[in-house]
Image 1 (cartoon, one colour):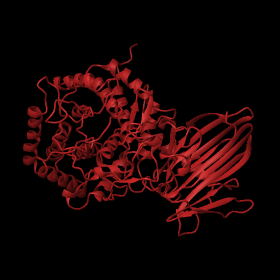
Image 2 (spheres, helix red, strand yellow):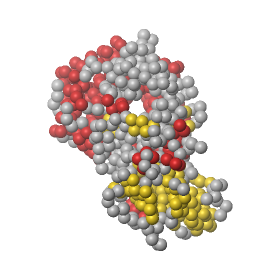
Image 3 (cartoon, rainbow, N blue to C red):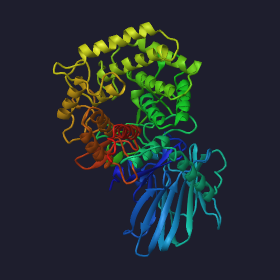
Image 4 (spheres, one colour):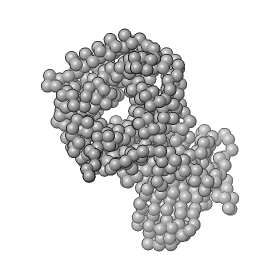
Length: 593
């Protein structure tokens, strides 16, 4: 039976991530980076595609789980008729240590445990050679295939068919450690680690980071967890911010809308940067701006909408047949063909985020402003070019209204940098084109009945239009925005959840999709700032109820089945949650009495 997406918790060392099911199985792990080939790929197939299960032998064992406060140390508490025990799962934060620690702690009585591991490297295309390398008091197996090797230390593992299995009893006061460590296959096997010291450092590192979050109100815990998710998706060495930890989890169950999100979209990273800045994490602004300078170095005409974690440019999309897909949803894709698209809004998101960094006190440098000027110069050259839009439509390009508004926003930020902050630039050219962008939207992007349209050649609306007041193109209570929201409520909210758009063929794909969680969080902001606070509060409560038991959100939600859908955890969903909660907090009515 396929494990629901919402049953997964994520572990992270800020270089890669693992997904652990509520039943104690690691079903997704890519080492050493988020975008490496999977060694556990059961998420997109079954246990035969790689998994590591650790749980009581009692099939009636009952589990509850939580993260250790402010960390990504996952604690799963198991209760059986014979005792209580916990499994503490973590990926060590230490640099140079690519590992997964699973510690079983006896709380009361005794409990029989089984650990069963199946290694399947490179998206289940390689079954490694496995051999025992430990001794009587230090059991270990070594698995090697191609460039990868892993050592698994812990209770003695015995080969059973194509798996390795260990059985033991944990009693109160006792702990049993299993540690999986990755290393290049041509080097000596990774050395053993001090588990006590490693868990202590990892817990303290996450707790210190989370302890700087200032969040209050009804959703404070989810805001903190969401900011932690954004940090978990930010590579500690390169500064690249990936959109999600997974690939090919379906937007529509059984469908073809399955994409690889383990890359750095300039848009999503810029929006994440804004959330960091709003909550005081200015070092993230420095690091991401440096990443951006490296990634887009060269001819501005070659700027891409996304890059690899270290700034790689080649992300060819291809299908992987070795993994059958989540509950059979095909194809499984690695790479992303949208890398070759033109999306006119991206430079706008980058310029908005970098202005926010400047306003927060991140000092502009000669190189950083030169970068922004180069981006604006390229935007000038591309001004009359239609695009594929924020949602990466695979149909014909259009003049998307949201994209044109973000072109306006990019030029507006450039003008403000010159006029307000004393920087240099072609302000007359930028001002003329900024005014043209506004005039284009006013004349071609507004329906006769008063709402903004998805693009200049349609009567449809699109949830991305909710971004217009967020970047200052218009007021939240502008009559056109109010009409746009009313039209969205009529056409994009059949179940009370906001769709991105109606899938009527403009995106070039077959089938439908489920409501996109970020869009509904944007609607919370819109309701909040346009005098509909009661609607905002009600929608926010419904949205936050969708988060799983450890506070994680995927990309979409199926209200019919009550299931999360799409890649997980999704940065855009979590940063939109933070923005919605911040909006509710800013406009919160004063306490009476």
